[in-house]
Image 1 (cartoon, rainbow, N blue to C red):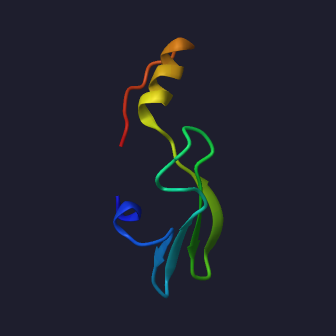
Image 2 (cartoon, one colour):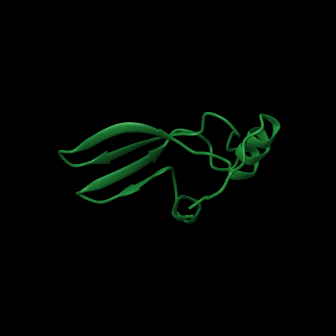
Length: 69
């Protein structure tokens, strides 16, 4: 990912920025938060999802993942 390739936890330009609020060497399975900002439009927190764990939890509760992009 782009985050792993950069120094620090923030990247972007004059239009957008992404600022990760956790340690890239110890990403938690739940609650890995980042702030996404799009100039004049968006300024909100987002959260990462670990797909293998999400799939396992879904199966445990009788759900089936039919698509992941």
